[in-house]
Image (cartoon, rainbow, N blue to C red):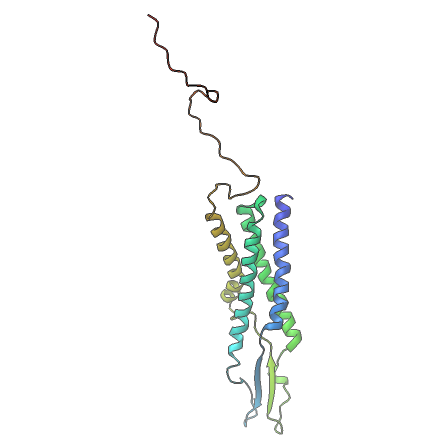
Length: 209
């Protein structure tokens, strides 16, 4: 298999695994239970029950944890591909990790939206006769909605994968990273005359009288 095909396999494989990771997250992530109430001034307010608001953090941390496990396993597996060890494969691993994060976020967000729906406070059925309505909100895939928080969520798995791959590289004593086929270092040129095996070295003769 050529190097280009190997890179494509890594990127596409990680993206597919990320989508599966997002589906698993959508099944495991805890929803957030809350209530929409109508105040005496006929204003709608939304509040969360107990410590249910903590589930926003728990769900986002769960997704990052699943992605971290995925990229660690992927980095170890890619390192075992001895024929293609090197910086190109590390770049493919990082790119694939970002693709896996994006796929997990997209699939996970779509599935929880389909499962729990979207809460529009203005359309919640509360009235003067029924002032309280309990709701269930979908978990969040990000810790926040600022560009920095979104970028960190997408790039963190790539950083983890790069660290694992670099640690494997620095622990290898060979200059070719233990790749296959092995690259043996060339023998140094000393300028000395090579003699046959078991033949005694030729000593310099004395000058003729």
